[in-house]
Image (tube, rainbow, N blue to C red; front, top):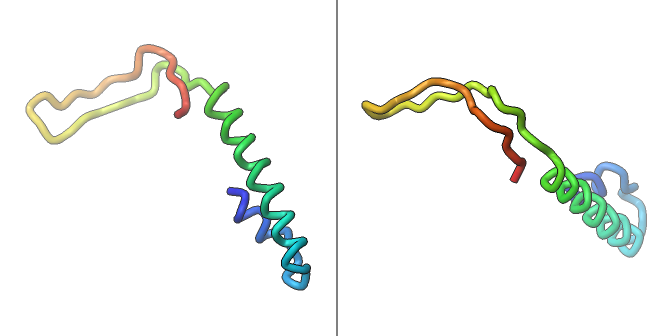
Length: 69
């Protein structure tokens, strides 16, 4: 994520040192965002699910909350 953000906001004419600094900053910011989401996000119960491909194929919904991994 950091590389994509840095590329989107960095002027192509910026020095390679400035580009490297922006890249490192956005890598850290991107990692912090992902860590926050995976640490704090919860998936609600009741999400529809189904399985296919065997005699035991089932449909239904999740019964408890989950976490983002």
